[in-house]
Amino acid sequence: MTEAFTAAEVLAGTKLPTMEVPISARTVIMGASASRDWQTQHHDHAWAVERAGTRDIFLNTPTQAGWIERYLTDWTGPRGRLGRLRFRMRSSVYPGQTLTFQGVVAEVTIDDAGTTWADLDIDLTVDGETVTECAARIAIPKDDDDNPWAKDAGSWKP
Amino acid sequence: MTIADADVKDWVGKTLDAGPGDVVVEQGLIQHWCEATENGNPLFWDDEVAEDLTGGPIAPPTMLSVWMRPLMWKPGPDDDSIRPLELHFQLKDAFDLPEGVVANNELEFHAPVRPGDLISTKQSVREISEVKETRLGTGRFWTIDVTYTNQRGETVGVESYAMFSYRRENSP
Picture (cartoon, rainbow over the protein chains, first blue to last red):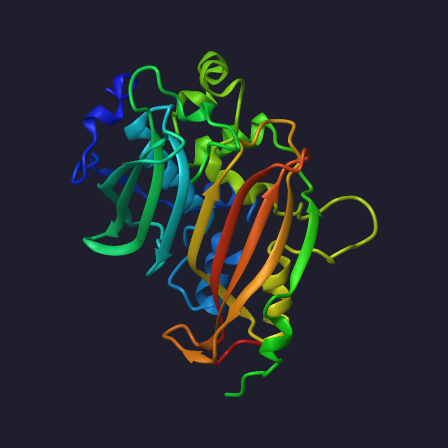
């Protein structure tokens, strides 16, 4: 249950539940629209194939970041506060594919401002092949009274 | 195939102050983002939760780049002077590489972004590679850093994009 989520349940090696997202043309185009990204390869099939040389339109980068955020905060609940995301796209994600998210906690640390950090490795796969690999750092509540969003500029060190 | 050879050292370290974005942070765009990523985080749907945890509504942190992208159209004289991630497009022009993809993206999140905020960006070129061959085509990798600040001058995020820009045999 996300409401009771605290760092007490989180250790190196803790696995996140797997999430599967079927990708349609609508997923790709709605993501492009929501990110206000009207580069042609994210909405025009013919252009993507003939000009960009890809097999179809594909998920843009901000949409992948948005799905990764959603995957992480489904796990932490609303008190989880993202610090950092670093991701590498090995291949594009196309309509008709199912995108599978898996994550594992690499390390849990507490910084000198008292923030509890979970560092995670997240793997986005299609048919078992990694399409995007991501290192994420998210602040999680140490206990029921802790709220990472209460950190101000001086004590927030992502 | 020839690759235009603009001078790399003229471009590394170049900065661009892109100023404030065209759109003010607002709830409709936040909802559209949550719709597109099926994000049910109550911070973005339940005002009481947002008030309790974040002192009022905020935007999902990963929306950072949304606040940088220009409107595709606005009234007034035609003006193409600023494009999204303008320095990337200037580099593509300078090196004559018509296609581009994002290879790596890094995001660091600072002060929360809230409805009503107006976000400004500064871009800088960190590095540019030698000419490389990949399965997409022949081109160069480069890294552009973007710093995002709100109207109070607070840093809300820092982003870096490693791009591969390239030319295909049938590129114009």
